[in-house]
Image (cartoon, rainbow, N blue to C red; front, top):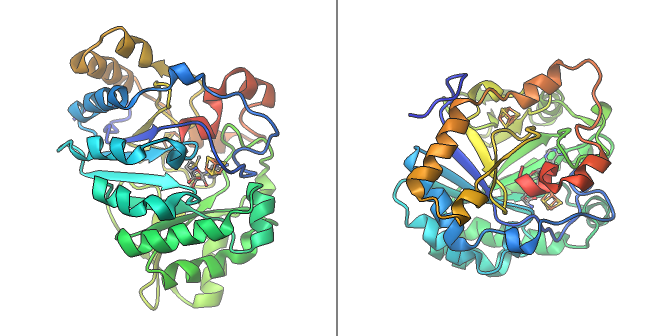
Length: 338
Ligand code: SAM
Ligand code: SF4
Ligand code: SF4
């Protein structure tokens, strides 16, 4: 097993397949203009396949497709099919905003995708438009309904922001429960791209649990020895939900995930400001063993604890300035996939 300097195994790869998106969520892409990755730099499916082989050779068993919006990547089921064939991958998942999901959900399942998470922050149409800039709530809901009928264990991720959607915690849980899905409430993070972030808009895990127990009664913690970022909880009726407390109670100590951007830059942490270029060696002919060697050396030197380091700061403001984001789009959350 490949361990970093804090004895954390490399277990999980988040694979961004595009930096483009068809929404403009206020906590991720609030600006009017963006600098996109050059098209010629975007990895082809066979290149992604080769890089993933290197990660699988190092013990990665869980791969999550993300973006940008992964469903904007043309022919995504073909990539899914290639990845699903790899016997080393036990868990092949995708995080999507759900807009384009309904018509392709069955194709994705047939191609071998195991699990889907859909991001949804509000059930109010006007609020959705304010939050994501496009009038797409109906298509997201259709995507959720379709995916819930096809995929087991559908998850719905909700970023909770004070004064924006924190009055919907109870209704989001009920919405997920009615569909046999599990909602996970995510604390608002000060990641690259969240240029409007402020600490007073963060609704903490404690506050989320207080509001839920005020409505639903006692909540118990579901204990599990996994490295998943969500703490899971259970209502008296057996409904399970999660809270991802990345801002107030980060889980860096057990973090086994790293990220590959659509143009082949490798990041050891969501908050890392520098990545490792895997596209250059790939395009100059490095084979699986050589790529695995580059990744292994990077992982063995890894000491990142980005969210914990942020928590230790006395003064907190958005992580990366707008000017820096424009100079290097790799610093954006929508480029490295969240
Ligand atoms: N476009 C897809 C989607 O929205 O599901 C996948 C990429 S998106 C960057 C991945 C996840 O990051 C989403 O669930 C989104 O809500 C989350 N995210 C983005 N910015 C965030 C922020 N500032 N704080 C917390 N979560 C954030
Ligand atoms: Fe929203 Fe995901 Fe697009 Fe970011 S990448 S703007 S979170 S849909
Ligand atoms: Fe892992 Fe970095 Fe997130 Fe901490 S901040 S959980 S080390 S990705």
